[in-house]
Image (cartoon, helix red, strand yellow):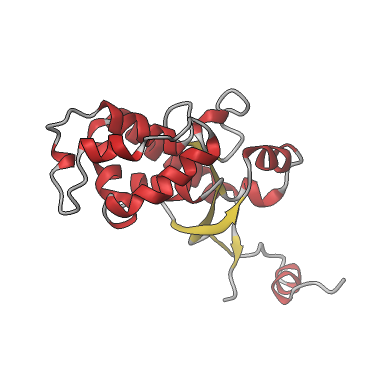
Length: 203
C-alpha cells in the first residue's frame, strides 16, 4: 500500500505529522423526533464543534451492537439516544452517548409535558389557537404505543411552531436542570473527541 505524501515527508524529515482538531462532528439519532428535540436543546449553545446531523435512523439495539463491536465511527461521533434505553446503555467516560430526557421516548416526554401544563400556561396563547383542549382532543383514540405516539407527534408538530420549537422552548424553560445536563454532556463528549481524534493537515 502506498503511503500518503504527508507521512512520507514526515518520515524523511524525522518529524511528526501536523494535525488539526476536527472542525465538525457527526451526530446520529434513532429517529426524526429525537433529532428535532435534541437540536432544539442545544440550539444557540457553544458546544465546541460544528454539528453535522446525519440523516440515518437506527434503532438503539443496532447502535449498541456497533458500539459494542467498537465500530470506530461511533467513537468519533455523537450518538443521541432516547431515554427509554437508559437501562440498556449508560453514558460513561468511554462512550459518546448522549441521552435525551426522561426514561421515555421523545414523543411521550412531550405528551407528558403538554398533559401537565396548566390550561392558563402561556404556551396555549399562540397564533395557531393550539389550546389545552385542542391537545386533549388530539389524543382521543391514541394508544400509548410506539407507532400510535409517533403518528400523533407527526400530526401535531405543525401546530407547535417551526420544527416544534414553541413547545420545545417552553419545555426547556420549565426543565432547566435536564436541559443543562444534556448540554454539559454534549460539551464533555465533544471535548474528548477533539482531544483524541485528529484530521491530517494538508499544509
